[in-house]
View 1 (spheres, rainbow, N blue to C red):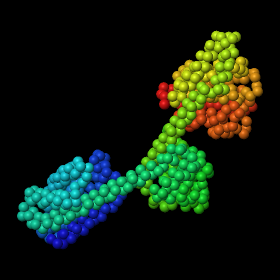
View 2 (view 1 turned 180 degrees about the vertical axis):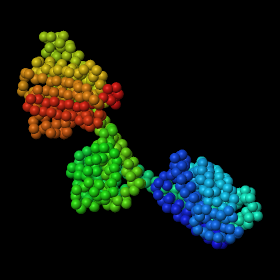
View 3 (view 1 turned 30 degrees about the horizontal axis):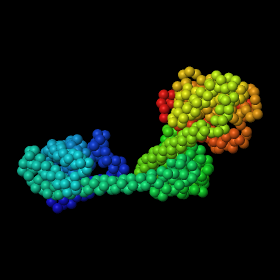
View 4 (view 1 turned 135 degrees about the vertical axis):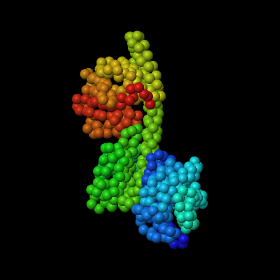
Length: 584
């Protein structure tokens, strides 16, 4: 009996070793977290059936109450019995996966045991099914509380299932005397071994699951800390200053070799290893980043060559690059670098993917905040225009002069002035208005300007009727027309023309304002719409604010496009068709 105990203990040790190795793989850990799903149950059946077959192979042969061999068996003689750890694997499968897994593993294990043969082999098919069902019942009980049986409870269930095995041998064996002699020999060591093995097996699973929960709690704490610390910087948008501060925080909390943040064209920040050649304000140098920007998909690489850095002594071996989005548009990338490719694990990939989504949301919050500030600015400007002495008195002087010579036209201009101010107030309260409403405001503005400077310019419209319901940001046409009137025709009194057009395209409408003026000076054309431009007739910030509002509301595809020459200037923007029927 002692020899049998030692031999069975060796077999259990082998199963426990394999179980320990499995539970230290991310694949098996994930299965434990999703064991109620059917596709996971089938995977558990495959795993534990393999354990059960291994147990049948490595059993201890017993003949006439004596241990005859402990080799690997494929077939047994009609008088030989086999003591093994099959019951252990069936019981654990039921405790983890429930009755379905337990019974299925029991059936497969039992059929293979019948195939091997030996004395009354059919008995073990019956006992295997019963054991799988009983263990599965206790497993289901534990799953209802989203947990597992305790180690002590597992030991009791494991010992009990072996008792069931002994009872089945006594009941279903054809030779009762031989069955009783066999049970006397194997019952005690197998009951002890099965109870002990089940307890150890389940303790490995329970401890691993608890360790995973603790690690997730720590990671959650770190992620919340990371999100809290980076939020103020990402809300500022992707600038060198905000990206550098955010990258420092990410590197310190995630314990990676280096962190880089880019926009669509340049490295904004690189903190950590390889900072000597991955420098801010430098054009993106790795093919990896370029590929992510083009495809919009996360990518991981595990060699220096795949990173794509051309520097001969770059120490970076692995990287994960995740795209950053604002309103479904890629605006840049977050890159985590490692000097040892082994450090780029499944956990880092999942964490980086989640962080990129959070950072994208933070950037969107920043864009919304900027949009709110820009809208406030537009509202303030429209309110200022109402009380701007220069604009107001010029319009009123024009109207008062007309009262004496053409009181009907003066009345019409007064109505246009009232309509213009009212439209400004309404436009300031909405992010998007119809082109029809925008044109009403433009026509009111044009009427006042043409009253002051008769025949100074001609404006023409080429806008299909179906586009009148399309939505555009408020003031977009007015600002472009006003900009043309103020800057395109300096000191020129005739043949001044402005064309406003809307052109349908596949996924957008192209809105453009064109003039035949003098064009934009070379020293200003590259910064128009991107920065404040000094101007004698205004603040020089109108196009810059308009450009920011367009991109903030409609994405980067709406950025102002400027074409200019000494024959005139055309400023255009593309507004996606999705704004035809929905406001923002």
